[in-house]
Image 1 (cartoon, rainbow, N blue to C red):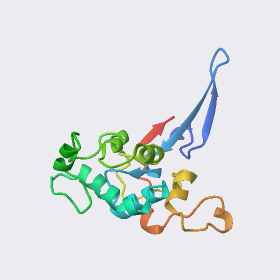
Image 2: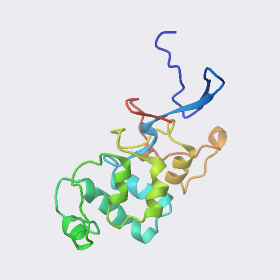
Image 3: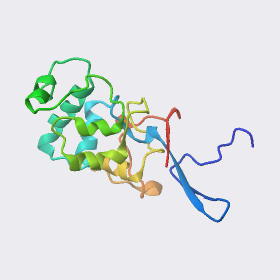
Length: 177
């Protein structure tokens, strides 16, 4: 039918048989199911970092460094990092503008590479939303953000996302895998 999407946008995999016998698997992910590094506030970023295994005593400094990396000034927040801190570490930065690609989180001063690797599947720079759409999010991300909550009832296998982190997708950015 006209207007009906050919592929599901719910993280399910569609398998397609190609001429000659080859096959491909296609998954379309709504970017609203990830944490937007350019929009997320300190509480959501902190929950993500903590859920991804960041040490509790470092979460505040790591959140501040991410916020300082993307803000438009050289005013260092408490525990953050600005141009003088990057220079002292022998590095360029911070961008002092929006992240262009999620991989840039690896350039944030003080974030350990193993933490960045754990964040990679759960972050975006494309959703333009302050929270996460739980219907589009992976079970893994929901688990990271809902560490202290126990799902019940019909959603027992899908952790609940705190209302303060929840938004509905505006269905404007997708990743095709």
